Image 1 (spheres, one colour):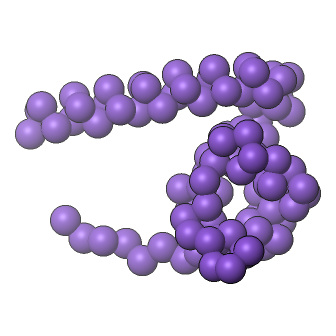
Image 2: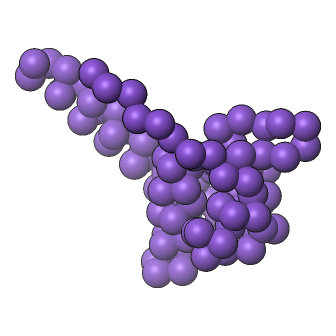
Length: 93
């Protein structure tokens, strides 16, 4: 199994890549929707997985019109589906 080198991005760069404001990224972190890969001092850094999750959150809010509670439920269900898929993949090996 090869490890991929993951580039970590500062909050402002992550916000620009996800097309949200830095304040929105801070909200995602406070709400527990996404966790920084690491925090150095007061500066959070985000990897590719976190960026993908923030894009998913943005789509849930903008495209489907979900509020914070709806996003929380949707993320929980999506996480469970991903865990079940991983378990099935491990079984089939």
